[in-house]
Length: 356
Image (cartoon, rainbow, N blue to C red):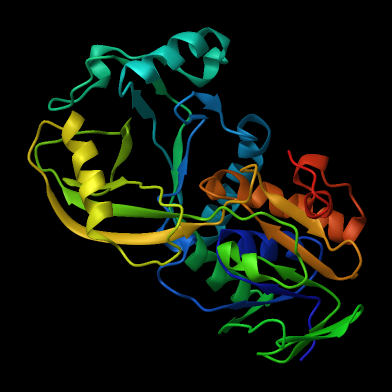
């Protein structure tokens, strides 16, 4: 079997790349184990303009979110599926330390990204003694819906063939520049792109990258008395689903790369919710995934420094919904047109030891 490209990994990165390559007239084969607990399929899909305890503008938000949003909108139109919700996030100050960070940062942040919290922003049952702010431009991507709609349409249009399986490396990749062979499924292509998430830590061709994968756990809860139209965040986020149903998370565990939910993760999220949610709630489900962080917490994309036709797309961490389509387009332009990759995210420079 011949193809223009083989993409190993079918989460947000691999799926967005299949679309980006198709815009250049290239047809791909995407190989993915289709596991239910991958980071992309577990992810809440939040797009947050300002993030972290220190209130930092999310890397690439102003430049890349319009690009990614346009991609999602085009897929919504073609698939007839709603994928992105404008979902303002109310960020509540958690403690005195965080209040100090906010006091120092608020006047330096772009004012179009946030506004002061008002009493009308807080639904009954939410405790916010230290105040907070609202990010009107926050949003949420239905990540499983995006992956499903993409798979259906890419296949229908003959732009991408899917193979549900796992490539064992290094023995699953043979051949060389111009004719790489990937087994399974027995495809020969001039281009192979690794979009493996945290599993790329063991990739034998892309050494020198420092992976810092973090396990994240999420709870499904029922809170019938809560009426929140947007995301609430105080130590953990609380996202509305259907009426009375919410998703809450997430934890950060740095030394566990399993996708198995834990009692400790559940206790941590419940404890943080109880600090600000003054209404009864019930946990109805729990899931876990592993974020593909790379040291520096920026994406890493580009070509292998010596082996033509091998490339990597990784390191989206918790920003996959924000960045994946824009980074995929940048990578496709690099691979097919020779466009330069920005130094801070170029895999060749990161392999050589440079840090962002």
